[in-house]
Image (cartoon, rainbow, N blue to C red; front, side, top):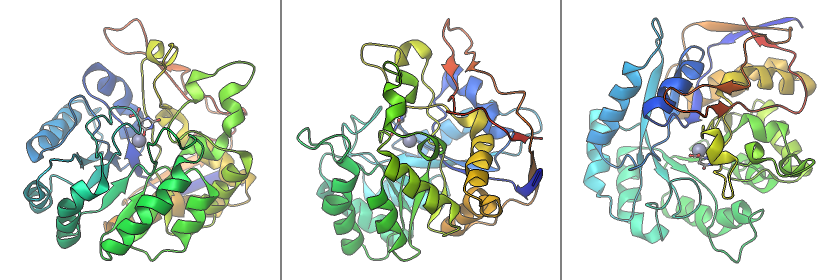
Length: 346
Ligand code: DOR
Ligand code: ZN
């Protein structure tokens, strides 16, 4: 196959940041994707309807001319969030979902939830008004190995949530293990999972190839090869539990190349090119549309996008190594796939 046309994709897990970084990274999403679920882990986090609406305005103000991109806003769950804010966010359409960050699990998660029981009244309300719960599924206990935190979370936290809230719709975000693939695929269709581009392309060796590679560090951290292969099978299977969430997470270069470098991989500029490569390698180009454009809308109960994009079997010629950020000496480095890319978005 040398050309592939699919319904316009959406990104169901995206970090856009704010200010100058937002301005720099937004076009890479807004020019290609129909919609994105925008993560709320700003400083300070987006915990109210007013903050979500103000953030949405800021995003819309920076949209490139002619873009019809629609940002879908989320609420950052804290120990003290009131169920009434969830209700208001659902009723006004300000919130498309709410995000659970276990406190300390990742970037800007310090205001996150310290004990899942603290948000049970909020989860009750989310179930009642049908607002999906998006989960960063890692435990934070320092005695649990970083490579085991996702599997332990499924056992200790996710399983009880699903049992205690049988109607709540849940997305396990950026899954990285075969345990998560098996768990999610055994659930009903009220449970889904996003998979990132980079977790389909790299395993944990990439973080240490020839030295320490801060631009390959994200959370959940990349796992062993067997897990990458399980993720590839899930993404390319067509199974509607699984859909694209890039987890594109820009950080200025000096904050990555640092004694304590930030977690996050910025992949918006080349995700569709990477995916075409992965799906071709798996002999599943016919399933790319399901993963990138159909399964997400189905989970969220929204129509698929009304137009298409076309990919061609040609090396891309417009992907920068770094995206410049106004007012900063540092830019944001773009994810470098392990092999040269062979597909381009026309
Ligand atoms: O690698 C990550 N970066 N994982 C997350 O969960 C958050 C994200 C960020 O905001 O930088
Ligand atoms: Zn994320």
